[in-house]
Every structure is written in C-alpha cells, then in structure tokens.
Length: 103
Image (cartoon, rainbow, N blue to C red):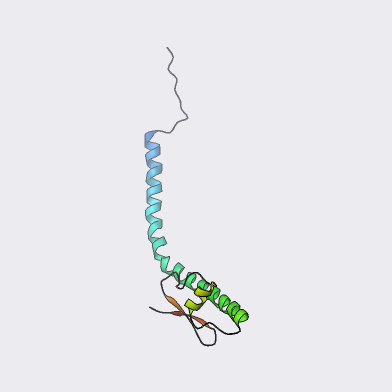
C-alpha cells in the first residue's frame, strides 16, 4: 500500500501566518480610513454645491429668474437632494450664488 504525499498544499501554520498578516494590515488601515471621512464629506459638499450652482443656472435659463430656495429647485425637479453629504444645508442667494449653510 503506497501512501501518496501531496507537497503542493498549504500547511495550517502557513495559512495562520497569512491570516495574521492580513489582520495586521486591516488594523493599520481602518483608522486611516475613518480619519479621512470628514475630508471626503467636505469635498463631496463642494461638488454638490457646484452641481446645484449648475442647476440654478439651468432654472434661470428656463424660468428667467433665480430660484428663491433649494426646495424650489427640488419641487421643480432640478435636484433630488437638499443637503450636502456632511449634513449641512445649501442656500441660494438673491443673485443665484449657492453657498453651504452651516448647521
């Protein structure tokens, strides 16, 4: 009776070492990702304000006047959201400029 020996397989120790390395890398990466969440939300808010500014201009071209509020844009179907990703609101000035409204 011949015993076949498969030498291509991973041993349990090798698999545990790989899992340990992956775990250490995850522990190092998770705090960095959570630190950058505020920065990502603020950049998202800047992009949202730029998009709303474009929709204000489109509204002005269609209606020959600036919208008085972000809710007017939403009711007309120009935007679907009225707040930035960081939770702050958006204001539209009398001259059509869009700014972030702090909470």
